[in-house]
Image (cartoon, rainbow, N blue to C red; front, top):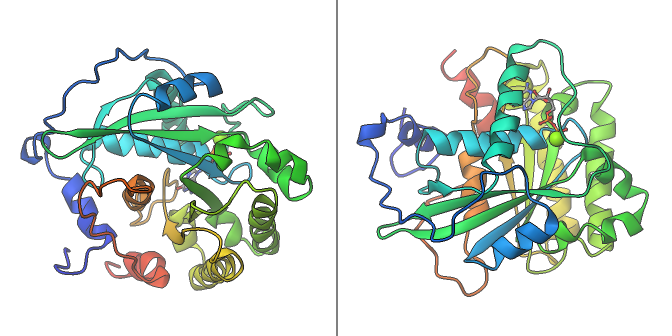
Length: 317
Ligand SMILES: Nc1nc2c(ncn2[C@@H]2O[C@H](COP(=O)(O)OP(=O)(O)O)[C@@H](O)[C@H]2O)c(=O)[nH]1
Ligand SMILES: [Mg+2]
């Protein structure tokens, strides 16, 4: 049900779900440089591609199992289905990498038991790359999303020197921190999540990995699990408190702090849709940096967190 004058996740999803022939023609010029259809990029390759055209660098941070890989798969997936936050898919040099993680995510959502993920623990950071087009004639911006194994980040709170090496965060336009919603809803794991997330963020700030000129996105993952839990409201309150704490402690340092709720790869059969909330995050990632012209009014507006998790799923019940 669209609410005119008050953009929400529901409106964005309606646009995405239009049949392909109703969507505006992307009118995108093909990238001039032929792209390899490769796996995730290493540091040098990503840097070379980054110099090619306007780009956004995104660092994704979160403990193992928070949903980092699923989130990246979901960004690729929703772009294959249609226009996301005004942007159309215009190419990628990490197509094979995306196809691999999407395959894994689809397989995982059919399994009842969690599986071991593909990311190699201890490996150096790898980047996924997407070219996104907007407007006619299309302006293309490259999006680079850094993926490092969860364990490297888990140890960060203890080892500040480790964080100093996280160059992909230092160079990121948006540092994206994932909070495992399923764990936050779990009575046994809740306290650990509530303690470790702020610790991780403080450590990254202290190490200079999060600094001025950057924006911070806090993302509550596994919305389906949160909505299905008996403690959905408490999870939302806990997450809100975490966000408020980050704003309080680091709001003066960073350019902006925003929060999101996503379901990249839902497993629970409720009203939460696959990829829900991900387009809002993409819109935030793509926001102009520095003196750049804004590509298009995004109309992105934050809904109260509680509405995004609880009311959304109960409204149709
Ligand atoms: N219920 C639920 N599970 C999810 C969601 N997204 C990811 N997962 C599961 O969470 C586990 C960890 O996800 P993964 O993306 O590998 O996390 P990573 O270790 O941070 O890269 C996998 O079993 C995923 O299937 C979601 O939206 N809902
Ligand atoms: Mg992973």
